[in-house]
Length: 149
Image (cartoon, rainbow, N blue to C red; front, side):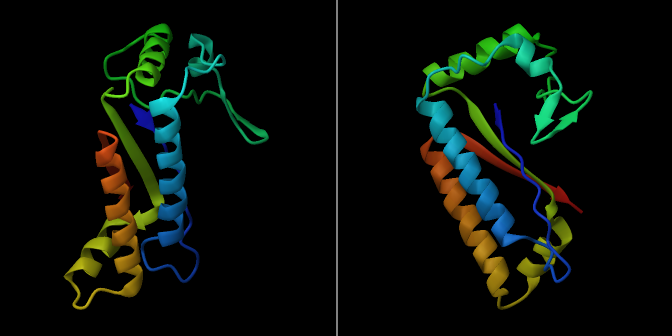
């Protein structure tokens, strides 16, 4: 699974969803998908890297590893092997998760869909989401979006 996350702030005059944030996260996620679909495994991908503290720019996030979720309890060596295998196999089962806790509120999106006609910002958000879904489907990849209430 490819997990790609970015949190975009809506700003003081936000509408409940950040179109620019979705566009930024979407471009990064699709670029990563292209890389992992056609790339060769990186030499820096080692089991030790996945359990080490994350370096976020100049700040070390102590106690935060690169493993977001591991329901099967795989070892870091097994996770590393799966990542390497996904780079070599274009039909590998992949997902992109956009985790946008501050990027969008579910209620704002749902309320916007109930309005007639749709707000132009909502229309932009949905058109970009639709384009991302199409790109992901062409790459045999599921796309999921998680946001706040």
